[in-house]
Image (cartoon, rainbow, N blue to C red; front, side, top):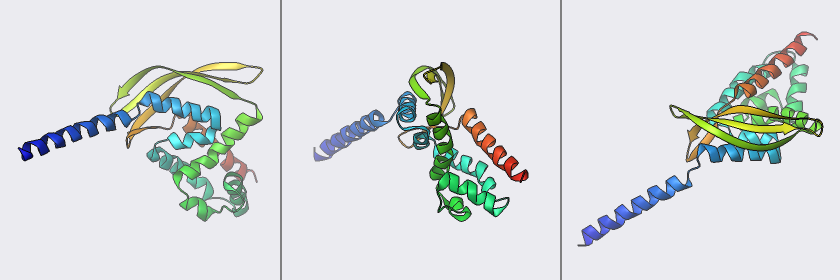
Length: 190
C-alpha cells in the first residue's frame, strides 16, 4: 500500500511539475511582445536582452575584426565612442557578446532619440514554424511628429531555456555590416 501511495504521489508530482513548467514557458508571441515593448520603453539597447546568445556571439565575431586592424589611434577612437573612454582593444576582445552588441545598439538608439522617433504598438499577424525556429509576421509603426510609417517585419525566434530568443534580422545584420564598412572606409581615407 505504501509503495502504491508513493508511486501515485510521485506521478501526481511529476504531472504537476510538467504542467507548471509548460505554463511558465513563454510563447514566441509573448516574447516578441516583450521585445518590442522593451525597445519602445527603454530604447534599442534593451533589445540585446532578447537576442539568442548564439546570435550575440555571431554578431561579435562579425564585427570584432574592425577593432583588430588599422591604425591604433583610429581604433581607440571607435572603441571609446562605443564602449567608453576606458575601453581598449583587449577589453573589447574579451567582452561578453551581449555587452559588445549593446555598444553598437547605442548608435541606433542615439539616432532615434536625435530624430525624436517613437514606436507604436506591435500586432502579431501570424506565424510560420521552420524546424525549431518560429517566424512571426508583425506589423508595427514608428515615426515622429511630422511623419509615421507602418512596417511589416518578420521576427524569427528560437527556443532558449524555458523561453524563446530573437534571431538577428537581416536589417540588424545589415546595420552591423554597414557600420563595419563605414569604419573601414573612414580608416582608408585617412
